[in-house]
Length: 452
Ligand code: DLL
Picture 1 (cartoon, rainbow, N blue to C red):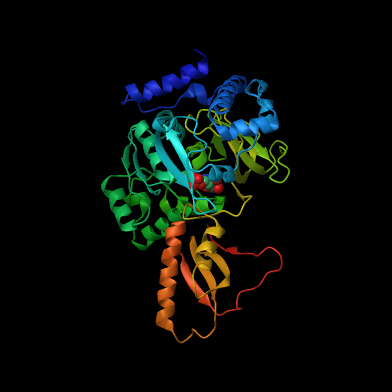
Picture 2 (picture 1 turned 180 degrees about the horizontal axis):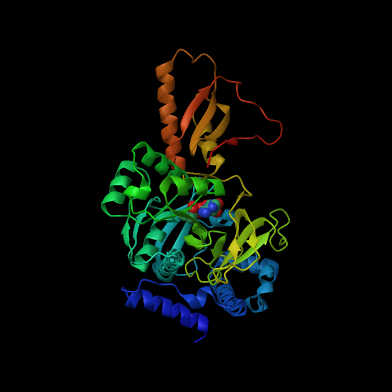
């Protein structure tokens, strides 16, 4: 058996057979020599390409258009001959068009919001569920988590990958997992105190809120709680925010990156160095491209992250355009892991917003507003404070000023309709017709003044 496979098998055995072990880290695969990693990647890429060429009509058609065949993929450089996949392709093939296994062999469905009414449907096979959990377990263990740790999961449970995938990962390590979900800070505090929670996984906005909540309630986390680490992700944040969370919660913050199309969380994680996210390259091939030209950027330059799955069974994806802007850190990590690191995601090349960890497209909001009678055409989405959203919208006609009760009813109704569409409840603010700026050319619909 090649060393890398032996390493992976050993990792799984150690997790399944030895619940007493405190370290689950698979040193072999994490510190694999680059040449060996590339051999493994090529073999897995070839398998993936063969699989989609046999089973997925979408890729069959793309291969035919490009005149590319599975046997043309002889080196990793041949990746560039393969077609890109976009989130529009996922929506166009909703719900099952990109499945590479029979429907019976799927085990779990997650979704992620899209620009139109339908979300993106992401299927997992049994092996995919297990691999996703393994990558989370690997990521947690990388920062020193052991089975003795207690994990309070503050990500949203449900169709979002954020909670379930890390839940399974922490269980794989053997931790006690508390599936708390986000919000309800009184209860979070009670759980942290009663069960001596040592690590949490949450969005930066909720982490900042929680820090303020503890301060208001006179709780000093260093003195009163057992918290050691927070894995923070699902939306962009800065180094300053990391420091604020670390000070406020009295713990170490590690950046946690992922996306539903690639399993969810556990795609890239920070190690003890807290400098850049190791992207697990035995499961994903990465490229950084110029989003306009689609050409690769020079080593270390910023561009859009493009990812190809190497191990996914139910829904393999080739050259998926993540829209996330980042760069690769070219120097080796002092921790000794050979999987390359990404710099913090600095933004997106499309107009998707992330509010309280939830992906939102302005078009979703527009659709709800424009379907509402009494509402005018001009609107603005204002993001302020710690992830608060206000939808400012003009009324269709003037003269409503006196009808306070009627307006409040309409405001509530719209806020509820928006919540049903985007899963986050915004404030709705009505303005007289003509009061919002009218832009020439592309309208600026979003003002982001969040202090994250
Ligand atoms: O947000 C998966 C996840 C959950 C990752 C929990 C980490 C923790 P999606 O809902 O599909 O999946 O959103 C994916 O969120 O393309 C990025 O734009 C953004 N994102 C995720 N993690 C980070 C991060 C999950 N650490 C989209 N920094 C991605 C910046 C992030 N952006």
